[in-house]
Length: 278
Image 1 (cartoon, one colour):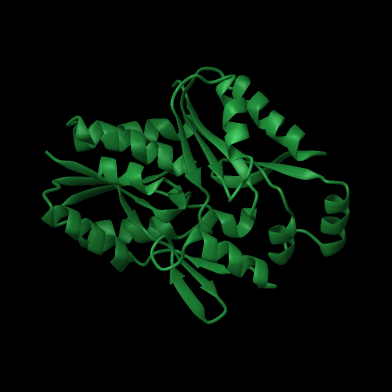
Image 2: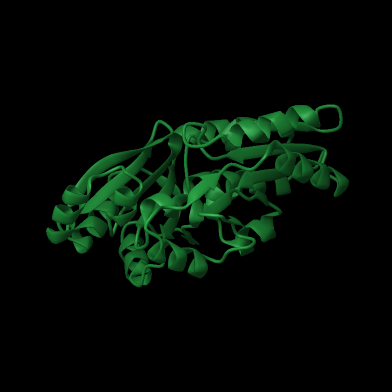
């Protein structure tokens, strides 16, 4: 049996990592007014951030259609796949998983597709997809890879530090006066993905303290077996990776925060995604 892994573009995986492991990425779409773009395909991260800066309103993101997933499933089958595991953005944050499930039903007579809710976002999705793809390359069965994906969900965490409240203000999640005050005080909100939702995880008075807080979160997480750093065009990402290496000696994957997550988090967001021992 040849199992292939599918995920969506919220995963923020570096493309070379996805290519090396044969992970298929189904893109979400992004709309700025009347202009619609396909994530990772017809808009670059540079163009995305430029448009965000120039726009007074946040772009709108939309889940892939069931047809996009179905086309991907059928393509993988044509390439020799005998089973597929789809690891999707948290169902609490998007309709992406529902599209993946509808497409799985459409191809059920041809190929078995198991859809797994990552209950996560960004590299939290990506790390699960990577681990599943590694097992698929090793020849594991469809059942065992599906079970692996589900077992990784509760042990995969994402924490981040926002650098600006501008996107939260544009999105109506925070009032203008509060955003202005917080910016004047240099407050840096911390967030985490908890129970499939993005939740507040505290705040720090400076970026350096916010980054140190992320490192302390990692230090206190127990045995970490896989880790990634995610960032939205951060000049200090190398410095942050060096800080992380002080408490984690394993391989560190570095991924750019794409349009799907970046729409809400904003430029300058930096974070960690990690999987603890289960």
